[in-house]
Structure formats: C-alpha cells, structure tokens
Amino acid sequence: MKLTAHRGVSSLAPENTLAAFKKTAEMGYQWIEIDVQLSLDRVPVVIHDQSVNRCTNGEGVVGEMSLANLQSLDAGSWFSEAFNKEHIPSLEETLLLANEHNLKVNIEIKLYPEDDIALLCERITTVIVFSQIDTTQLLFSSFSLQALKHMRRLLPQIPRGFLCEQIPQNCLDLLQEIDAYSVHCDYLFLNKQQISEFKQAGYQVFCYTINDPQKMSEYWDWGVDMIITDKPQTQVPTGKNC
Image 1 (cartoon, rainbow, N blue to C red):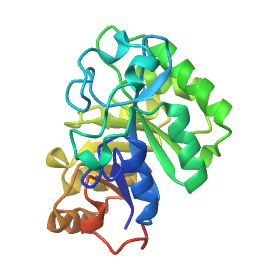
Image 2: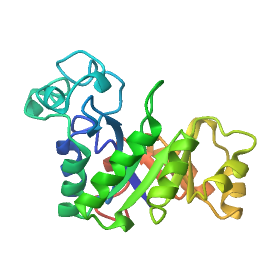
Image 3: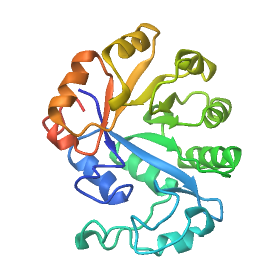
C-alpha cells in the first residue's frame, strides 16, 4: 500500500508544520503532501489557506505578510498547546527536513486569484536547486495546468501530477499536454472505470483524501496507486509498504 500523509500526519500534529512532517518520518511513512505559496517578500512558504486565520493565532493574507511576520505566528496551538512553538515553515526548511529524514515530498503549487504563477514556480525552483535535494524525492501537483507547464520547463526531471476534483471530460488530453506522471482526484468523484482508463493510458492514479479504512480498501482493490490521507496510521501497520 502506498500512502501520502496529507500535510504531514495532520490528524496527530498541526497540518503543514515541521512537527507533522517529523511525525511522518517517526511513524515510518515515506510521503508527505505540502502546499506552497509565496510570502510578501517572495519566499515560498508551506501553508494551505490564502489567509493565516484558521491555522495560526494571527490574521491576514499570506501573500501580504513577510516571511518574518508569518514565522512569528503560533501555528500549533490551534491544534494543541503541545505544539505552541510550531511556526509556518518555509519550503527550504521543509526540504532540509525531508533530506534529513529521507522523506518524499508531493509539492502542491498553491495558487489563488491574482497570484503570479511564473514567479511562484521560479521561486520554488530556486529553493529546490539550493537545497540539493535528490529530485527523485519530489513530485509536483497543482490544479493549475499553467503552473505544471512552467515546472516542466524549469525542472523537467521532476514528475507532474494534475489535480482535479471532478474529472474533466478531456482529462486524458490535459494529461498529455503537461506530460503528466499522475492524475490526482477527489475520491468522491472517482470510479473504478475511470481508474482503469487512466492506468491503461499509462498514468498513476492518486486519490484524496480518504480517512476511512474500509473505503481505502475499496479503492486499493480498484487499482489506485497512491492514497492521500490525514490518517495513515489507521490504514496499514507503521512503516510497512508506505
């Protein structure tokens, strides 16, 4: 079974924090999924929402705050007081941790309206090159075809996964357009026939975000290659084929 810890083991530690990523490694899992966007001073940071409101003690839009301001926030106490020293990590910090713990990283290129797609992709590339992480540890994913096209140009050796909620009718054409490795779908809108069609066309099939073990087993039986989950610990024994 292949599992990705969604924003780290986000059921046991605050999402998209170094604590959640360390927990992934401690429990023996290989893959984490993270969300990356730019701070005001154009530093790639790891946070899902457009604002800091939900997962920190602050308020404001990520892209309107400097790295220093973002990292001064408490990004853990909302989850548990035990994590009150957690901060919003930069992509650089995250890749250094991944290198140290031999984690594989699914980097979701997170875009909101009016974001500069090219700039985000360029800044991500700079951090990856600087980190000297083995590119076999990385995978890009995004709902933005344009972002994935940029990454194909900038770092063609790193595989690309197209994210979608409901699968578009021309999905196979879109996958060809970006020379995709995988398609990442919301499991609620993914059926057995679609999985078969993608696999016959040569693509890996990932699905998100399954937290129910019985539903997990059903999708494994259908041939899904990777499941993205908040609760990898409920699916398979720790450290085994994950």
